[in-house]
Image 1 (cartoon, rainbow, N blue to C red):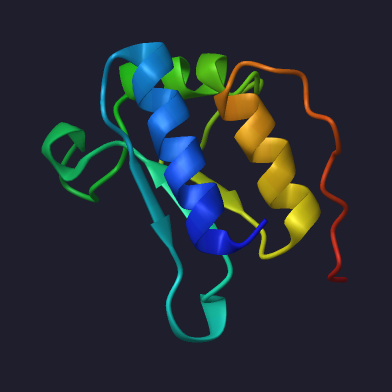
Image 2: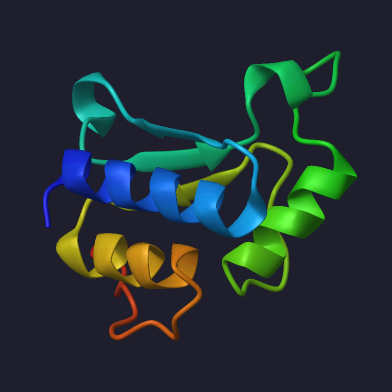
Length: 103
């Protein structure tokens, strides 16, 4: 699954399940393959552009995670991570769990 396909699927699944839009973006430059899931800019909290506690709780529930960082969820640039988060966004148990490829 390529990065852009994963972005489209995650964004559509989160909107369908929550009724709200989420920012799902691909990295740039050396982080090109990475994906970030965050609240829309209009829902971010100042002064640091963080996610609100309410959005963090909702996103964690949607993705079946224990918690979500204030800066959102980062998805590594690998097919197994992308497939894991497409499954999570669709409310399915992950068919594969991404394995870190870095030290």
